[in-house]
Length: 231
Image (tube, helix red, strand yellow):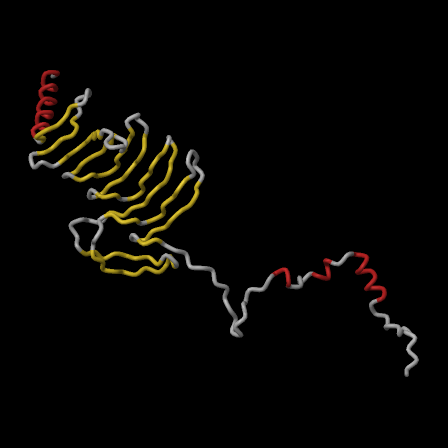
């Protein structure tokens, strides 16, 4: 039975190797860096890039499907520190991308991948000023990965959010300025609340003032002579 199991494992390994023109084996026997008979990268890959002309070297790992990056990829510097987590679809960035510095999240990006087989596509374009308004548009595909969604930037060495940017199909969303609404007469309808007399102004008076008004408020005013002789 054990011999039969070993034969099956060997045949499976030979079958997977036969699909690769070149490949590498890990210490665990996993296949890496497979290039198929059509010279396309397939399966798990570990890429090593040395430092060159002042540009830092790095290593990255992920999956290739028909020579295109697919799914989640991780990038490390040559010291082994994580510097990026990126997501791919059709070989292009798609979804949330995270970038790290000194072990801290430095910023996040949001991308939308488009099928490279399409020259034109019909997309739903939301109105960034009205979440309930959506317009269908036919667009020509010029870029197969577009900035789309919220980008976040963090303070170095902390998780404090510094700023955000919102993109819709590669266009930066700029909020409309707040313009006060005007009445029919053309004057601003916004009234400073500090200038309005409160409805409970009577209740806000001190008790002594209320007692004085209650006692003397109904009395007739007394004419006071001012010394005028009437001439």
